[in-house]
Image (tube, rainbow, N blue to C red):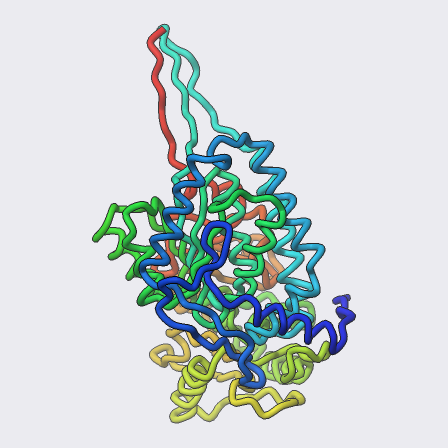
Amino acid sequence: MDKVPMFGVSDLRQTRDTARRLDTSWIGDGFSRDGGSEVRNIMSPFDGETISEVAFASERQVDLAVHAARAALKADWGTMGHEGRAALIRALADAVEKNRLELALLESLDVGKPILHSYNDDVPTTVGVLRWYASLTETAYDLSPARRNGVLSQIVREPQGVVGIVLPWNYPLTTLALKIGPALAAGNTVVCKPADDTPLTTLRLAELAIEAGFPAGVINVVPGTGAVAGKALGLHGDVSAINFTGSTATGRRFLHYSADSNLKEISLECGGKNPAIILPDVKSLDRFADDISTGFLMNSGQLCSSISRVLAPRALEADLRDMLATKMKEWPIGDPFDPATRIGPLVSDAHAAKVNRAVDNEKRHNNDLSVSGAEITGTSPRLVEPVVFFNVAESAEAWSEEVFGPVLSVRFYDDLDSAIRSANDTQYGLSAYVFGENPNAIREASATLDAGFVAINAFCEGDFTTPFGGFKTSGFGGKDKGIHSLDQYSRTKSIWWAT
């Protein structure tokens, strides 16, 4: 059962005070407003109030941050052994755990997600990820070929150097951990650009890192727009690699930035339009009801791996309609600081308008739908009621394009092969889900789905030991999570000894 965090008005007030104090870019071991492009108001998605005023970085500030990171590679961090780096990453994990409530409140304040979600999912996951990569810092190793003909060969890993980390707004804290964990484990320094709307937990973690003993310049944060700070990071000649999570359109820009500068390595985790296939052997949806509904409702549908399409056998049509209608009512909508809330506001007015446009476009030619019916507290325009569309045309935007909100599209099939073709008929290939009873049928369906991650009878992304990343326009160049993620943050050198 989920834990309900114990907090009061004073905790929330203190968190708001922390947010107001985090008002500048973090470069090296201190804050600096010098050369900032503008000061931006960071707004609460729930009530629209200003949380903080954050100085957005200019091209000059990005350059300062990169130089601070480059200098740290040649100083204590660069000469530190594996044990020292591991100890610092563990110390940061301990600091995050110690400040669990504050970081959860800050994340909910900034992103709008329910406190129950931030407290039970985001912060504990961040702690676990950092501890996992601290362990890998000490234990990961490479294989060398056997000695032959009097020749000894070595294969060694080296850090890439300065790594640019570009974060999304939906999971800023956990995504940050999933990227800096392996980057630091491999010995790199990082310059992090949080999303425009959600910089606060990234700035706070940078503070905690310095307090935990990280040398100056190892973790740098440059809040800012993609057009200024993101572009400057992508084009910088002293940045060796970029790891990006966000839209496919923005991911393409970073490929151009790389081509136009130093051919830095680019790792992309982009959009998804993820199908869930219910196999014909399923007789009852009771076993899978929570996973299917959570798949499109969690974090208000603002999740790259959300279930956004369902393909179900026609024999289950009535059951699926009833199940989804029942489950949507179990997800109260409203104030993210009410522990009973399960769906909070979308992150911004602009994003809420985008989701509402997609809903309205489908409504114009499809009135076969079911809306949430759950209790709604609050009148924020960013509170978007979940909706399920049935019998969606394969040519419809709601079926083919990523909406990134609590919107589910459903089609019913008579032939499984046609359902799988429909599932794969998309530019994306991030996640897919299979719900069934027969192991052989599940295995065959999983093998034919064109997605980088397939979950069976569950809604999840695996845990942080399992690589996560997509195919096609959902991204390439590396994986988040697991030991494989070290590859994108390392360069491999072969050394050939003639003895």
